Amino acid sequence: MAGIQIIGTGSAVPEKILSNDDMSTWLDTSDEWIYKRTGIKRRHIAAEGEGAHDLAIRAARQALERAKEADSGFSEEKLIAVITASMSSDYICPTVSCIIQEELSLPEDITAYDINAACTGFVYALQNAFRMLKEDKDGYVLIVGSECMSRLVDYNDRSVCVLFGDGAGAAVLRFDPSDESMFLPIAGTKGSRKILYCRKPPVSDGFLHMNGQEVYRFASNSLRTAIERLLERSGLSIEDIDQVVCHQANARIIDSVRRRFPGAEDKFYQHMEEYANTSGASVALVMNEMFQKGILHENMTIICAAFGAGLSWNAVLMTI
Ligand code: UT7
Image (tube, rainbow, N blue to C red; front, side, top):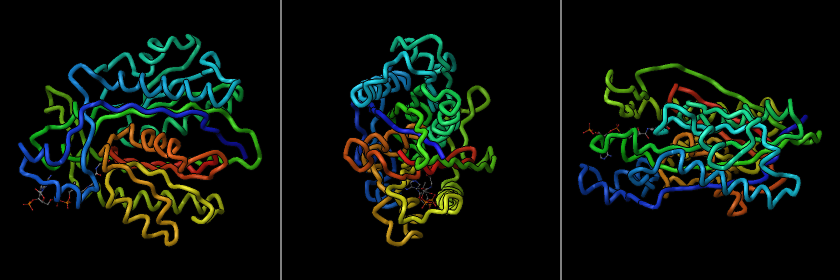
C-alpha cells in the first residue's frame, strides 16, 4: 500500500485560561458537575482581537520549523497545499489557509482552502492531504485545525459553553510510498439541523445549540463503529494499533468506547481536562501533544477518529 509520514507538528493556545470554578461565578454550574460529566477542568479562551487565524499561524509556523529540523529535504517551497479545518474564523473570507499563506510567505503556486466541517474537519484535512500527496509524491502538505469556539458559544447557556475552548494544531505531511505503510480513510454522515447547529444572525442568534444526549449517543456509536470498521477493513486487531487519537469532546464518550476494546484501554489518550473541546482543532492539538510527549512516534500504526456537528464522523487508520 502507501501512506503518509507526519514530519512536524505544532500547536498554539490563547494565554487566558477559564476554569470551571471561574465559570461557576456567573453560571449555575459547578466544577463537580462539569468534570464528572465531561472530564473538562479548564479551557483556553482567545483574547479580544485574537482570532482563529492568529492561532493557526502560530501552530503552522511551529509545525513548519519542526518539519525542517526533522527532514532536511523539506522547505516551504515544497508545499503543494495548506488545508485548514475551521468553522469559527473571524473572516468569512479569505480562508484561514489563505491568511497562513500570506503571513508565512508560503509559495503562491499552492492550493489553500478551509474545511468547514466542525469537529470532523481536521480528519477530513488528513484524508484530502493523502489524496493530494498520492498525485504529487514529492510534495508536502500543511494541515491545520484552528478554532475560536468562544466566538460561537453563549456564555449564559451552561449546557453548551462549559464544553468548548479555543486552540490550534498543525502538521506537515509527506507521501510514504513503502509497501508496509497504510492509509485507510472512512467517513459517515447523518445530516441534521436540529441536534447540533449554529445559525448566523440575523436569522438566528449565531450561537451553537445542542441536544447533548443525542450528540452523546451519536458520538459513542460512531466512534466505536469507525474503529471496528477500520480494523475489519485492514485485517488488523486492536492489539496491532499503537494509539487511537480521538476527538477530545468528552471523557465519558471516549471511556465508553475504550471499554469496548479490552486490553487497549491505555491506547486512548485524553487531554480535554486542560483544553475542553476545540472542535476542528481538537485532533490536531492532541496529536501534537502526543508527539511532544513521545506517545506518538515514527513507525506506529494509529487510528485518528472524530465526530460532531453535521452530524458527521470520520477516521483514518494509518502508519506514521
Ligand atoms: O463535538 C461534539 C460536541 N458535543 C458533545 O460532545 C456533547 C455530548 N453530550 C454530553 O456530553 C452530555 O449530554 C452533556 C455533558 C452535554 C450533558 O450531560 P447530561 O448528563 O446529558 O445532562 P442533561 O443534558 O440531561 O441535563 C441534566 C441536567 C439538566 O437540568 P434539569 O433539567 O435536570 O434540571 C440541565 O439543565 O443538568 C443541567 N445542566 C447543567 N447543570 C450544571 C446542563 N448543563 C449544566 C451545567 N451545570 N453546565
